Amino acid sequence: MSEYRLPENAEGAIVGCVLLCPEVRAEVSRLISESDFAFPPFGAMFSAALELEEPDSIVFREKVKERGYTLPDGFFNALSEVAVNRYNVELYAQLLRESSQRRQLRELAQQLENSAAAEDDPAEMITAATSRLAEIEHGGSTSEVAGPDDAFRAFWEHRKRVEGGKGAVPTGFAPLDDILGGGMLRSGLYILAARPGMGKTTAGLGFADHIAATMGPVLFVSLEMSLEQIEGKRLARLTGIPSNDILLGDGRNLDYRKIRSAADELKQTPVYISRRPTATVAQIRRMAKLIEGVQCVVVDYLGKITPKDSRVSRYEATTAISGDLKSLAVEMGIPVLALAQLNRENTARSDKRPQLSDLRDSGAIEQDADGVIMLHRTDYYEMSETPLKSWESVELEILVRKNRHGGIGNCSAGFFPATGKIIRSA
Image 1 (cartoon, one colour):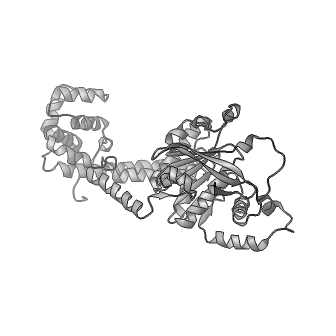
Image 2: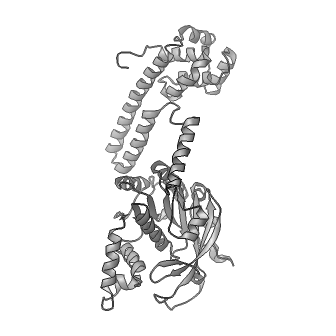
Image 3: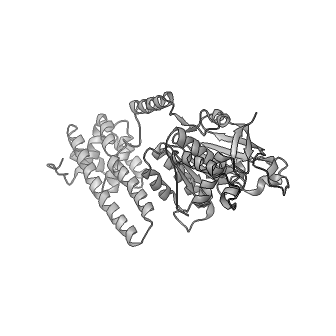
């Protein structure tokens, strides 16, 4: 389009044509939107014109007034006089779109320069810039509205993934996967919540290892435990040696042959563990993008994610983080499993099984999540000073309290606290 230039009155000419020729509206609105107009009143007029069933100056003036602008008398006729020919309006719209893109790119460049000068976090800058570039590239209504063909194509691609065994991402614990409808849906945000020390990190690691072994790479973002602690937990589950002995034992009674064998198995399991002690959602996104073919992101835990704005309240920060995690899942087309803490309200109830209302800090977590999985152990609330042996298990109740894509329900597992092994109950 570089051999053509956008006429000075092009914005008014486009609006005039859309007013007089309703048949061009669908194609023009596919190419440009209100935000593409450099002069905001013309953008408002363009949107108002799209809503008219037929040319009508009185209705047009009212619709423009609803958008905050008052048109002078005779302006409808003035637009009609400068209207571009219906056969040229697509060319004008394409030229306007290119002009809009150049303007928005200059604005983005200035914003990036200001952010860099203010020493803002690079990961946040890159995430915001990437999102903005996508908006600038696509623009119009095309990226916002899917037509019938697009919708069916998306559904058909999903069906092919399902029939190829890749529609959902199984956790590896069959009773839970049955309740979820086969596993965690791709592009879904799932919450695994429990009181501290209930076993949620252990369960999250078990899910991560299964997904990595059967589906492909997993990013495990640990914001609470060190790399060696995470690896110690994984080795304990595979060897049957208590994690405390593996991490803190003097080594005299350790079976290093088992540990080496388990370590060799873990080396073949593509679980990538974050080394960062803190992370924002933007930084988690960047780490996930670095892993080719990543199938799932597990975050331990949601309450430890650094908010992008430290000035807001904890409630506001959690609300933003929850929404950003959901956006990350949708953008990458993979499940995001975020571990979460519960408040203490359930401890005062006679039935201490956790409820959705027990989620800490924000109701947005429940709202954004595609699924909420909660863990409950009766023994957790019983006073006992004798640690369990490696061969002793307790009952772990797994409660699916929300499942946007299927039913809810409970299942039980045998949980070995010393080693972190979870098995199906008899």
